[in-house]
Image (cartoon, rainbow, N blue to C red; front, top):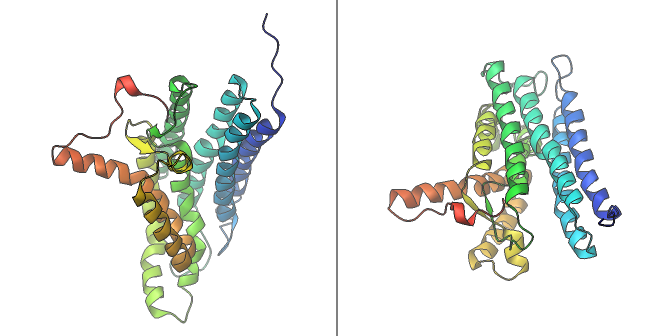
Length: 288
């Protein structure tokens, strides 16, 4: 009989921290109701989205810690997927549901009445959860130990969750733009603030489909660490840093939407002009 493997304490704690962040994100989002709307600025929905991003940090470091200490195991892989299902599956869907269904604040001139049927928004949230779970299950089946992890097959679930959670992160900056003293910014905010509630369910539905797609997404972290990153990646990081210095939190949804929708746009462009699309074939389905 094989000796029983001991649980890797430190990597396991990092993985569980990811799950706790997901549960905390759901808890904060649940505080927004018809009788207790979201507070202006950094309210419950902002902290809910922030906890999802904290879960991403735990998810980034738990695998690296396990490989560094030589304590990788099937238990750790399964535990990671279970926590990811909470943080990057259930929490973003519930956050979107709360963001769209309930008032974001009281007495604001830019408040927008509910325009989507409640059943439709719930269906989009449920589809997101289903696609995230399928995505994680496919990852467990198709990932091999010797996989180079240079690219993903389909949109990674943390990136999909980031695309959804980035809008509540950027919302306080939009509210700050609407403050008196800057007429031009106030005009822009008058369009963007109501538009967020219209766009977010569409973004959630689109990234759900992209998660179960076979479109290849680059693994920027692995490529940069191994020195394989293209020169344009460095240029993109430079422009991203400049954008953060200029518009602060507003760059977060732009960056995540660029990553999520950039690859499908390139696929469509190459198909339109008769080039081969970067879709992962059945023979080369590795990981996502």
